[in-house]
Image 1 (cartoon, one colour):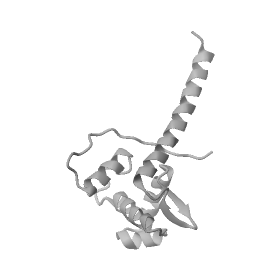
Image 2 (tube, helix red, strand yellow):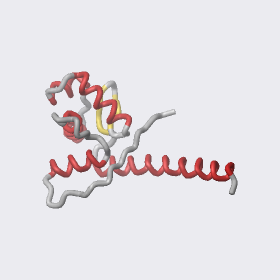
Image 3 (tube, helix red, strand yellow):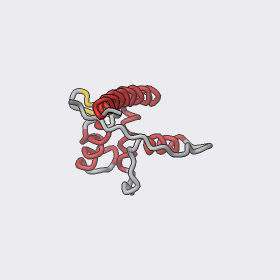
Length: 133
């Protein structure tokens, strides 16, 4: 069974935002960024992966560590989080965004969410049926 953690945090979208602010809002809305992450390490990894994926280049955890100035352990921790969220995949032992464009990524996550909600609905209906009126 494949584990995927889907998190959506509903917050107000920033108006008149810069691309950087929009990226932070997008990632925050997907539950990727934690207020305890003071050095924005997950955000830095996310941005680096966006850039490399758009260039058609996969990155190893060592390359990500070098490019972001983070330890390999920190990079691997955040990569695992990004993979479990369905945002990052491995390809030939390296890491890339699941798809090349952010809007496509949101479409894929929406598909994942729909499948999960459908399964939840079916189980809830079965439980209701078993419990009776």
